[in-house]
Structures are given as C-alpha cells and as structure tokens.
Amino acid sequence: MPDARTRWGFLIDLRKCIGCHTCEVTCKMENDVPLGVWRSWVKVAEKGKYPHVARKFLPLLCNNCEKPICVTVCPVHANRQRPDGIVTYDPHRCVGCRYCMAACPYQVRYIHPLKKIVEKCNWCQHRVDAGEEPACVANCPTGARVFGDLSDPASNISQLIAGRNVSVIQPEMGTEPRVYYIDFDEQTFGAKRPLIWKWR
Amino acid sequence: MDGDAARLLYDVSHQTTFAWLISIYFYFTGLSAGSFVVSTMSYGLGIAKYKPISRIAVIAATACLGIAPIALLLQVGWPIRSIWNHFTYLNFTSPMTYGAFLLVAYPAVCVFYALYMFRDNYPMTRRLGLIGIPAAIATHGYTGFILAFGKARPYWNTALMPTLFLVSAIVSGLALMILLVMLIFRVFKPVRAVPGEIVEGLAQILGWAIVVDLFLTFCDIAVLSVSHEGAQKMAWLILGGSFTPLFVVVENLVGKALPLIVCFAPGLRKRHWLLALACAGVVIGIFFMRYVTVFGGQVLPLM
Image (tube, rainbow over all chains, first blue to last red):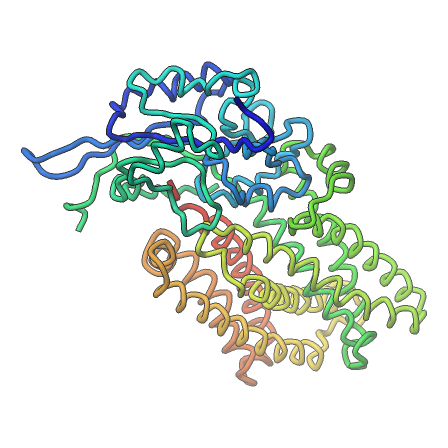
C-alpha cells in the first residue's frame, strides 16, 4: 500500500511487447488526448536484412524524472513534482509558454490544441490516487508494462529491476528518468524520423 | 551506413515549440538593447560626438520594446493569464521568471531615460543611462539563458549562448542606428545631409562588433562539429543541410562577412549607399541568426 515513502516507478518489458498500440489507444481514451498529439506511444522499427529480419517496438511515455527539467524551467510553477515522484502539471496555472516542451529531452509534452496549455503523461495520477494502475498498464494484453513502488523492495517492479538488466532512455541528460526498460535496444531508439524542414 | 541500424516504420509527430514569434521577440529585444547602448554612448559614457543621434537611438530602443512583448504574448496560449501568473507565481530556477521582471523594468528605465533626455536634464539622463546599460544587457542576456537551459538541444545548450546573443544584439542595434540616422538626416532634417563623421564612426564600431560575433560563432560551430552525436548532426544541419542557405549565406555572408569588409575599408565606408546596403544586410542577417538558432536548434527529433 502507498505510504509517505512511496516512489512510483514504471517498467516496460520489451521482450513481451507485441506492438499492438493498446497503450496508445487506451491512453487517448482515459485522458481525452486530442487528435495529433500523444501522451504515450509506440515506436516501430525494423532491423536486419531478409531473411534475418526483426521488427522492434519501443513504447514511450513521460519518464516522470527524479530531477525533471520541466519543473526547473517552468516560469509559473505549473509543473510540480509530487511527494510520490509523479511530475504533474496544474492546468489552471499553466500559461502555455511552451518552455517545458522546448526543454524536455524526451519530447513527451504537447500543447493542447483547444485548451492552449501544455499537457503530458502523469502516469494516470487520478487512477493511481484511487488505488488503481495507470490505464496503459491495466490494459496491456501481454503484461509488458509494470507499475509499482520503487521504495518497497518487495514490490514486483523492485524485484524485476533488481533481477534483470534494465536501461533508461538518455541517462546522460541527468534527469534520472523513472521508466525502466528490459531488453532496451539503442538502435531502435536511434531510428528517427527524417528531417522535413518547413518554414514555420 | 544505415544498413546495420534500425529503420523507422512508425512514430508519432511532435509539435514545434518555438518558431517565428519567438525569433521576432528575440530579434526586437536585441535591436532595443543595441540601440540603447548607442544612445548611452554620449550621455552615459561621455563620447560627445554621438550626442546628435542619442534621441533617435532612445526612441528606436523604446519602440522596439513595444513590438517585442507583443510577439511574446501572441506566442503564449493564455496572454492575460500569463501576465498575471508571471508576477504572482515565481520559480527562481527559471530564466523566464527573471525575464518577466526585466521586461517591465527595462522599458520603464527606457521611458524615463528618454523623458529626461528630451528635457535636457543631463545628470538624470546620465544616471538612468548607466542604470539602463546593465538592464539592457540583462534583458537580452536572459533570452540566451532561456535557450541555454534547453539542455537536450545541442545548438542551444552552450554557455556561449547569452554572450552570442548579446554581441549579435549590439551588431543589429548599431546597423539599425546607421540606417535610421541616414534616413532621418536625409528626409526629416532641414539640412538634408548625412553626418559622415557619426555614421562612419558607428560603422567602425559595427565592424569590431561583427569581428567578435564571427569569432564567437566560429567557436560555437567548431566545438559543435566535434562534440557528441546530436551536436554533430546539428552542425551538419547548418553547415551542409537544410539550414545552410540561411546560416551560411544569409546570416554569415550577407549579415556579417560582407558588411565587415564595407565597415573596415575606408573607401567603401565613405560611400554611404554601400554602407546603407551593408547595414540592411546586417539587420536581415541577424534576424535569420535568431531564426536559425531558435527554430533550427530544435528541428532534430530527440525521440
């Protein structure tokens, strides 16, 4: 049970991920995420040459970092880190200046096209506060996503992190991300969109 | 090269954060800071030669500050809320919090400085001018910190950024001043003659400012091109990619290198139409310096 020492963490076992995009869709439903933006998504890449080929999936979401740069740079303190580690935003205080979007190394923030404020994944804090798991965890058909208390050594996530080889994305940014990956592939992460430059 | 690496099949798109409006904001605060420094040369620093242009400079500095915050307010999602929240909820680790106060304090200094100057109150003008120089530097310098704090973007995240912004602000401000002095003395004054000594003096200062600017730009790009992977990609984007026409041709050739020759060669500097052309190049070039830095610095996808 969560208490004052609770520190939430997230783990994605990429060996179990089948690339079904359920997390992406269920997040849109749970959090009313508008068209054209995503809080949680799955990147798909392929590797190798026929017949030795593989398709790789990399689910991405907000890392709810231990040292979040978005909290550092927010000029109006709309981004805050809760005592349990979730980095949350205050929709009534955000002025939509987009500085956090520019500073985030993980590009998980978006400006809501209608509300004109910046939103992001907050690990479904309304569900977590009610004692449930985030929607993407609850609906993942293969159980690839694990959510739990990092401060409790007996929790499922703590034991998985202790017993497996885990990675985080871009640890060099110094933000101490809290989404851990089992079987993380640097090449899949490195496959990026080609740059299409337009005046804007 | 890409044969071994993974090929992307599906990914979501990410929104652009800062673009034209922020470039315009940085550009006009830069012009204002540069013009303000020119206006304090006679009153604050005591170079009597530039006294006739101080009033033009201070009006330009104040007018540019009228445009800059408008671009800023058009950029944010909630303009009225942003004015209120920026002064009621403070986060002292964010450069933007300091910026909100600077954007009020500096225009106030500007207005009072202009007021005393037009009333010929020399001691007060001098005092306000000396207060105004650090205010102008801080107001433009903080914009450099805004970008430098975006630590995931290699083109922004450099300690050179505030200095680079300040120097290019002074470059653009001096060029604007030369253009305005030529225009005003030729069109609006009773004796329609461009004051050669003033304009050419400013051109020489402009030349030295461009030298510093080019040196800092070179340092920035040289380090960028041998730094980590993202930095190298960014260096290629501006040296041999889609931003090359803007960065190399418009910013550094039209905006800096060619005007540098005009400013330093006495024969060319005395041809005022050529000097005006060079200064127009600088003013355009520095705008694209802002655009390439702000927009070009963030087009590479991070995820």
